[in-house]
Length: 122
Image 1 (cartoon, one colour):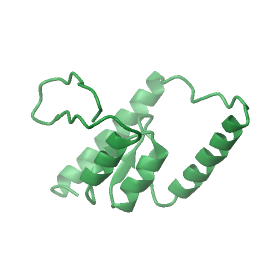
Image 2 (image 1 turned 30 degrees about the horizontal axis):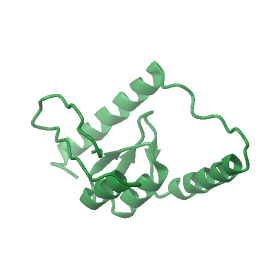
Image 3 (image 1 turned 135 degrees about the horizontal axis):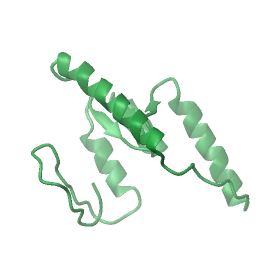
């Protein structure tokens, strides 16, 4: 989902949705479309929090899960880091995406899909 055209591979399982330009418009649309039991993949913490509130499962691209137990702390840490950046402190950023991250993500995605395929969905 984006506010510009994205080239996606042909697949019956992939659908590109274009939203109007604007701050967090795509995130808002993701949350609107999310249902309880759906899988949302995102590193965006506020989006993850909103999806969790709707009962969705949220996996980040590095293979970590956001859930009701850790999302509040993640939001607090995000706010602290935003405040530090606003004062001019260079907080750096996340480390580069690695093969280990890709492997952790693939492993968690496989586990999720296997677990939910057995249940016939959510």
